[in-house]
Image (cartoon, rainbow, N blue to C red; front, side):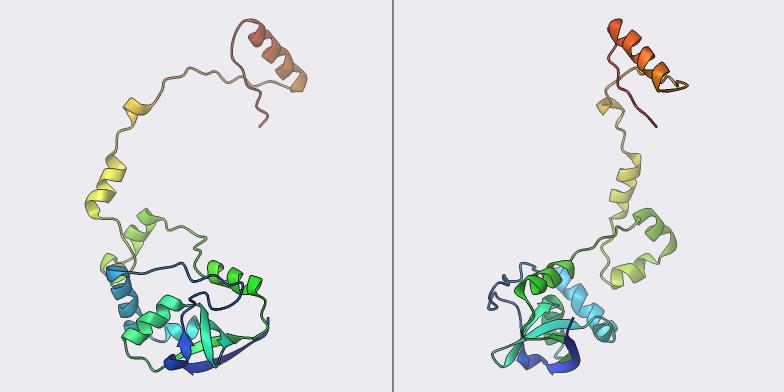
Amino acid sequence: MNYEQKNIPTSKLVTNSGQLAGVPKNPRTIKDARFRALVKSIEDAPEMLSLRELIVVPYEGKFVVICGNMRLSAARELGMKDMPCKVLAEDTPAEKMREYARKDNISFGEDDIDLTLEEWDREELAEWGFELPEEDEQKEQTATDYSEQIELSYRIEITCENEREQEKMYNELMSRGFVCKILTL
């Protein structure tokens, strides 16, 4: 991948509004409390912007933001004059820019909320913008009774010595009217 790292004035950065051929408008939005949390996050730790730069591409004398449109909006809210960026080559294929834009916003992992609540400081997490379940919601999740939703079923597991014995047992039970499934574990 061909790119250059540099700080670019925020006045030269434009959000992705679909102006690049083959690259759709940025579909992500951020509102109210989540936007305020992002602004606070950048205000508290502006060095994070250098660790996770915007990804931009030159376009008509400016730079279109491919990855980091919301960070740019938050930085502007804070009055930041320039942003650390990785500048893609002008000839970067639209397919690659679309891929970067979507992958930049995919979270492949999941948080173990129980472990998070056990080992991390709840106030600190909230301060950083991490969405925590309400304490009542957490209690509800652990105290829900699903017993009325469970459909009773009666099953038997039979361990066989080999495949031939398994087939014989299966055929015998089927001939007696039982519903059977063969599982090989």
